[in-house]
Image 1 (cartoon, rainbow, N blue to C red):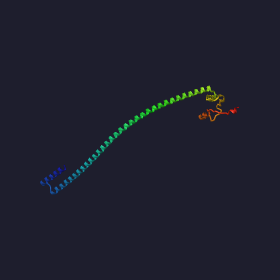
Image 2 (cartoon, one colour):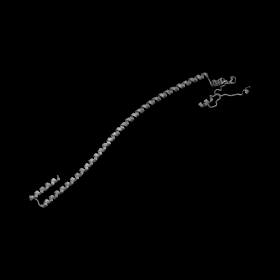
Image 3 (cartoon, rainbow, N blue to C red):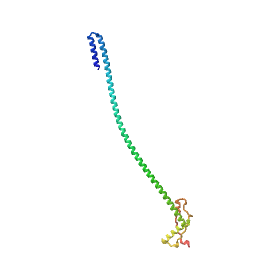
Length: 202
């Protein structure tokens, strides 16, 4: 387009010269002005072409960034899907744990109830036995004498002459340990066998 304008101007100047309308100086001046215009237009064209190239470069860069963002978006979508699957798995696991915990709590309640019932039955049985024992042995005198008599009978059945045996009870009046603990009471529930020289009894 610039080239055509330059040729048209030259043709006009040539026509003027041929018609004798302009001098050589005028022609040279016009030619110089046109050359300046052409140079300016070429400079503008080069600048525009450079700008176009820069815009193409920017466009290419932007397209690369867009592709990178698309890839990142795809990766994020995959991560989101994976997280949603993990969340669903976690919720299922939590629900299962809650069900197991509820089952354990139910079993615990049943065991506690059964334990209380067993304890009540045991306490009732012990109370009943104590009442029966108190009927047979109103005090420790009867109880200690019965224990002593049981041992004497055992010794008699083992072959010892009954006239050599004596059964006595001391009740709770000859303790060997404090009677305020299970260990002490166990020590006090004892059988003592005393051997006496027959000559001392004559």
